[in-house]
Amino acid sequence: MTVLLVEDDPIVRSTLADFLEAAGCTLLEAENALAALGILTDAAQRVAVMVTDINLGPGDDGLTLAAEARHRLPGLAIFYVTGSPERLIKRPPPATERVFLKPFNPDDLVAAVLAAIDRRRERRRPAPEMTNS
Image: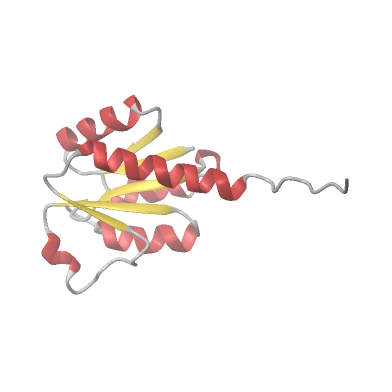
């Protein structure tokens, strides 16, 4: 399953990408919300998890991107990374979405992403057939 990483800072994006790829994630990267929406609208990409910074520079922020992503892909797991927690006061994300405050341990983010991928795989797995003995 594919992870979309949306981060405007190329150094942070590269670092997080290295951790996610080392954990075996198939990864797509975007530097802003517009590029991320282009990826999300491409059905061939099959994005299961999105990790987004909240402050993405010019254009839509990560919270606006997440709202649109939720609309387009119900069931998409969303994680936020931010150094600006004050932006969450007036627009907190749903309780089902997790926020990582910078600086954070990238291993914690990777563990959360892998757990979300596992949960999604479990939901997609067909139920075992019942047999009468």
